[in-house]
Length: 272
Image (cartoon, rainbow, N blue to C red; front, side, top):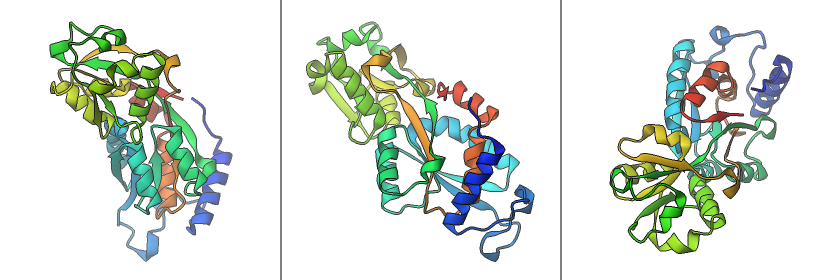
């Protein structure tokens, strides 16, 4: 795992905080942090983190550990990356953004809403075919999706859900999109796809490999070929209009530690 040198990190941190209009003593650690706006020293700092829905379980576990170690609270907003991008553009509170696609981070960078020097490709993932327990014997490969007995195949809405976009790419490149398009059930995010398959409201679906760990009754069939879709990469970056730039930067660095890497790997992510 690549690590920034402490000197590089300090330089970037100072740049961010200077731009954001936040001043802090360089020698101060977490225990010496000056309260914002003259508030009392025991007031808990909170940061807003917008993150792709597929990161819910891993980040929730990391949050518990981080909040035990610090006096900082993490407020997560989990949703489809496209929805989060729109919210940030419209001014929703956000200090740190973790996207499930480069496209949505690219859009925010083009609009000057992130600190580009803080952008990092943090994680990777795979696209996985899952099937409901009722259809397990009928689906053993993506080639079985064209079978007439299947009536519901769920993917995320391609325009706003990165997993749905990757799914559309894969199904098109595997030459089966046109054969199953009328069977598709679109979902607001990848976790809804998982729910549809788990409850039998969809015969099968395409989700991230990391999401399969949260399945209750559904069954993993296979990972789709990597060459069938764009690389699945999770970029992260600090937001320029941040109210807690220093605290957000420190949490961002925690996401790059060995501890966080272990949690992400446990939930099926690849640490880049």
